Length: 497
Ligand SMILES: Cc1ncc(COP(=O)(O)O)c(C=O)c1O
Image (cartoon, rainbow, N blue to C red; front, side, top):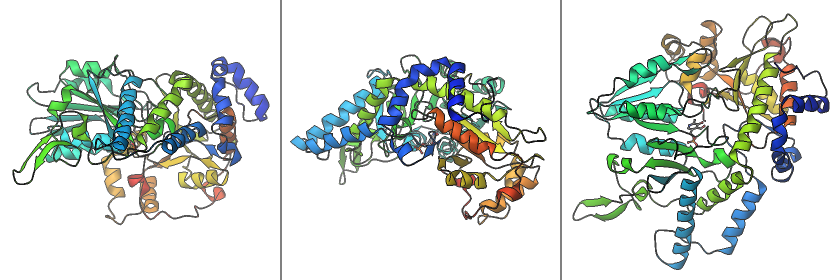
């Protein structure tokens, strides 16, 4: 375990950190970038620790995109006039770049541009040919946009089964997974969905599952949204049928563009429930016939977010300057240090101040650390109040369930009865009431605090966060004060990513 450094001044703590993590030195370019490209963080005295929510953009990304827009005349790409053609060329060159970045052969994969990862997941959900006898298998650890596919599956008569997680590491219960894989009926459609990295616990789930599931008759949907900002995804080494992602999580800008990377085998298998402008090769009103485009165009409804798409190529090139492996290495050093420091936080009576959900080593885990604070008697401190106090210090954290209710329910051992008791007040239940009911059922929490690090995080951010965490030593619910805002809507159930 690394030394507890929160009693040292920042410079001494940094020296000690560098000695403990010599690999961090190799990521020096990112410290230069922090000054040059992300200087607005320090200028605005902001400590940004929500990279799993959204990445940050570099100044140069914006400048390059602006220059491109200023120097070209660009029209709607659905035409052949010169401005339309110029735009089509930029969109298609970005599409090829995306495939190349993920090492996906254009003979095997298509890249469909979507609004975000959820848009990619919805395309799969609505188009996968679920029917009676088919099976949708998914892990408890999933974003709600993957959970939501169960509604398409059920509506069409397919079975839906969840694979549980093991505690306390919140990894997939592999014994159960292998049993469930064996239930695939080879004469039916079987879809298995899981995240490459958890947006709740930071756990990296094995990519080997893809081939193992294939061998047992499953198509695989890999939600890579939380994985790709700090890891290489190589689609020549693993070949899931579907990959979902949002580009803003990788490099901050642009928002409003994500992708579904889809194996070409699936182009014929998926059945789109409708057609729209841009998706058809031919459609008639009198004849009441339409022919859907046979490639990615069949999945891109209406006009793409075309002016922003070239900024995706700029963003990928930005990441390539330093290499996602370097970012991953840096994040790993930072995450290990952060966890080690948090684990050493104790109240005067020796009781731990925090509980971390998920693995406490960096083996197969990324830079997302989810936790709750407790008082010296082990009573939960309200994470909403902690977020509020963090905000006063300019620290951006995330709280709630991060749109991943299944992992939170397993982490806190919340049963179906607990959740239904919490919801018993009906649809006008609000968050404070829901939290109260759940806390009375055994000091359980329906939410937590998420700290996530990324390419622009430096040591100082983490040091300052740890100093903030230390301030809860010997504090109680009463001494930290009441929350001053009241959230009417139940964020624990409906919060965003
Ligand atoms: C693992 C994971 N999947 C899917 C999503 C959904 O992404 P978006 O909100 O960009 O559609 C998120 C967002 O946080 C995520 O972390």
